[in-house]
Image (tube, rainbow, N blue to C red; front, top):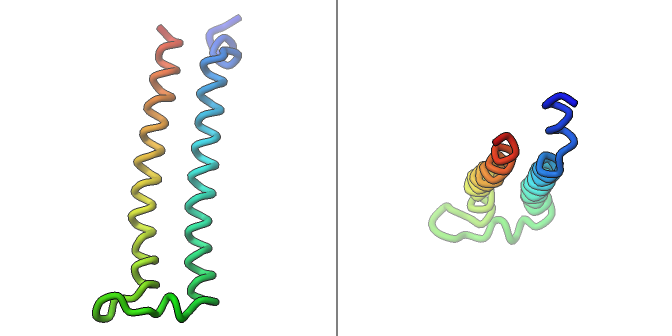
Length: 94
């Protein structure tokens, strides 16, 4: 059996792939849910989204801007999870 087959059939690699899949799917679903919440909120809950917070800043604008923060958190979480996955795979190689 060559090294590629050994890695592909190893428990460490399969665990790492499963972790990657769970992280990717979970983060994507979470961000898509936030995105569609913004669309539905802006379309059907205008009174709540047009509530003034400070000056011309309203809840809808803050909600829309929160997507940048959430995107950063998604990226940071993904990198953290992939570092753990890389360490697990590297431990298999040694």
